[in-house]
Image (tube, rainbow over the protein chains, first blue to last red):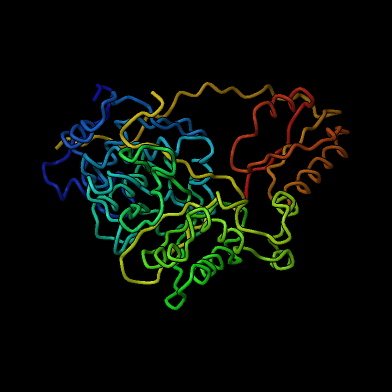
Length: 347
Length: 93
């Protein structure tokens, strides 16, 4: 750490240090791990680049995120050092222009970056890809997602009510990080689908507007399961030409695959069936002539094609519960991005 | 106990405001629409007030951003600046 790093001297009492972090406005509302210097150093050891390396730049505020800044907030989130490469890769992905980091964070739309981690690192760092996938209980999932939020708050100053104007927000703003369940994926895993070798892990960032549980315990065909999911995707509150994330439960994935649906078939079916009529959109005030012309379809579909659907498998073995996460924005203002974890593919 | 500050320093900004117009009389108005609902009529009505009060001329083609929450595409601002004396745009949702 360089001499310009600002330091705070506090009493050598952890509880007092936790209170101090609250007083400084450094938290997400929950207690944080005090960012003690040796912990930050340990976090930075997981990165080979200098601490002052800029990994993301905020276009509106012109603030830079350095590895050092990311490390401090990762400590506060409760991350172990081995989680740090995921946090770094996530922000390198979010820094890519099509993700629209500022807009998705500041918007009344209330999205949160959903991180989907795929590849060997899932097991290497003990992430949860199974039961309670989106819920609490796993340190890696919880703290990686939380580090993202703390960085957004502390580094980029996207303070709720000031720079973050989200009308209602969403619970994912605390932490929104999952792992792909490779052992139950009947198709190619996401990291390989993205073009990385099997041994290279990836993180995909998706500006997620919320979480929709999609339940179907009776459908025994791909069509039955996917029609249910497509209907959720096309609900009047979510229908737009934006992207979608669909996380199939292992039960649903098995049904779909047993019907000989490929991953591509699954996406195409979802796209073709996630639609509302022009009349419905006009009636509810959501019809856009420009978007309708862009789609050039009889009805208004969610997204522009099956390629707009991020499709992974995750969750516990039992339960006909899949999920749909709508993208932020009523249009295509944020596009999902991916990055390899811990390696520089383009170097 | 020594804690490391989790914030980042404020960046050095080198922005300068454009010189203030001494008069609005007969100025040319460029319009940059963010593409959201009602932005176009709002901009047109606002520009009309300047046209009536200050005899401003409204540049005929309103430019529409393709992404309301991202900066205008490269070259758009420069193009509008070359053809107008001041720009009206809208922030908001």
